[in-house]
Length: 181
Image (cartoon, rainbow, N blue to C red; front, side, top):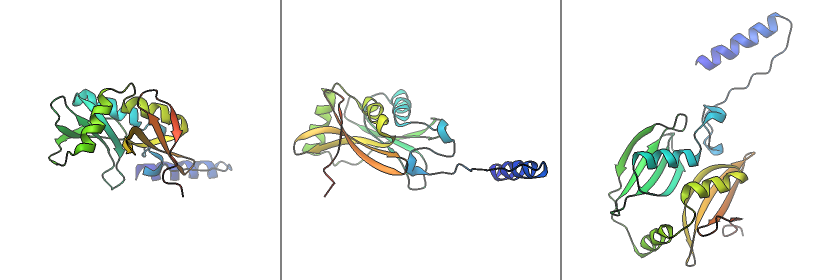
């Protein structure tokens, strides 16, 4: 509401002095990974760092919720194997809370992915940083593609979505063409 008043006041002032004005309102657009905070929004690597500071462990994923909750959700696994979902505000990086994931669906694939991450040279934060050169990161997580585990990173640039693989060992970024057909 305040933003609309400021825009209206600026427009009136410009028109009163005989000038012209172009006003742009930055609204919530989860497709670009930022919020109304504009370019000051919290990035995926920053959300992961905040989550790990609050709940130490290994970050397995970070996802900018677009379900109306408007928060980063970072999945962290502690040393004892318990999983936590840590929610981070996308504008300030404040931790909203952490909740233990009570899903007991840890299968062989989950264990293999966790083992791969434990021995990896590239973590979720580094994968997000590497893929950020391709656009604004909106999601990072593990993907097991025919026995090869890599970080899967979704980005948005100029309204176009991109999907990238980041190698666990080298951090090399390649385009994910698995979904292309």
